[in-house]
Length: 97
Length: 477
Image (cartoon, rainbow over all chains, first blue to last red; front, side, top):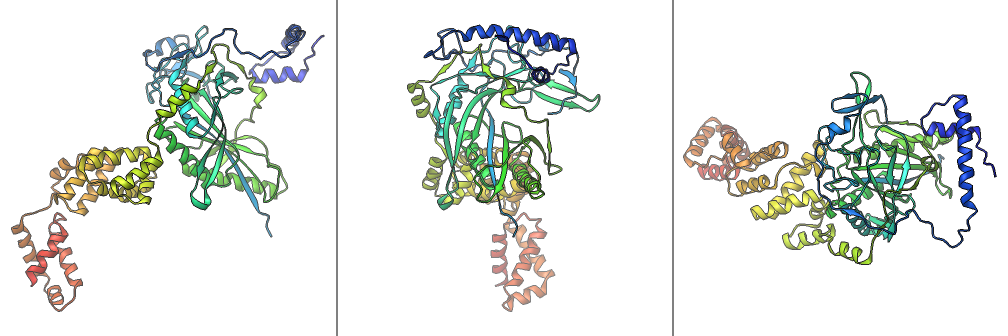
């Protein structure tokens, strides 16, 4: 079954991802996403009646850390790849919350 | 007759937990470090890094949930909330949507006939975002990730509040409770407690809820009260004009006392939540819950009763002092040091409250040490300084936490207990005020007041007025 992705959906996903796409890119993205959804549809062929949904594949729980500070000043590494920096901070286009 | 409107308010309260490390990595949570010094690959979302949950976060969150009568979710999980913003380095926030740590609780506000339950819908654990600082110089934003990954608990209430007073009562109750648990310092000004207000209005008696707006950037109880009044009026005005309230997020500007629409609110589906694959479920056993319950410290109500019994403090005073854990701590330490609980309580109830009000401060912002308050009480009790001087010294303690004994010595504020000196001044005052002396001798009690005043002035306030009065009477016999 071929999934159809509407133009509106492509627009919306673009806005949420903060991406500006050309018409050609939108067309390509649409085709790719349709293919992905078709692939996911294969899973719908499985009978999942009575099976608990899971969020993790390992039979593990309660993996904890103790509340002890072991990290020191990480600013050099953190800022190492910053395209722009100022005052020990990442410099980004003006953003107001 | 004008239509009557009812205000419906629900709150989302974020509380920064008092852990030493962040929720998913071993970086420090300390407030105020140089930008990006408390960061590592995990809290800056570097590819390949893996989060590991801080156990203390679960302990604190569960303690708050139990104190707020919530049901603990025995198996809870984390989810990713996806959005793009520079303060969020992973492009998702690890939060809890499907199975939050607790649900269905309540806290009680008011007393007697006005007692009311505010229901809690759910409580979840999540990570805080970084901080954006606007750089005026070159019109850019600077990003500091020190706060990224600081643990938060979000407490979501039901829309059970009807006025600013109820909102503040609810917040005060939460704050006191959480401070007593030691789970957070809950400072609104510093942002360790933040409240978003969801508000709608409807005609009195209507069944359907109106369209609500969400207000952010409220960093004091006063701002919250003003924002609620402002938003209620704005919505009523729209409805009266036959217009609609738009569902949106608004930012309160307390200086302008007005709110502004922010970007239109993304829907829950826009966040494309999905289970966090890097973290395993948290299973909270019955034994664990029992242990947390058993370890809960003395809560406010117990403390209040103890103060009344142990120190003979009146109900009202005990209520005020115990409302803030910080104030209660100062009280207990100072009382133990000077052995005069009633006097300590008086300084807190009268001068401290007056100064807090004058400076628009919260009790948590009291910065003087109990040692200095205790010393002041002792100095006053010993008669080393009089009450007028003591008040002045207290203002200095309140503002700068000065050491009172050294300060009064330095400033020459100690009472002059030299009788010879006092007598000399008395004689001079009497000689200079013959009319007052005649009046007093003629039975005018008031005239004595004038003479005491003159004497105190001549002694630059450094005498005990009681002593001056006694000596004057003796002298004029």
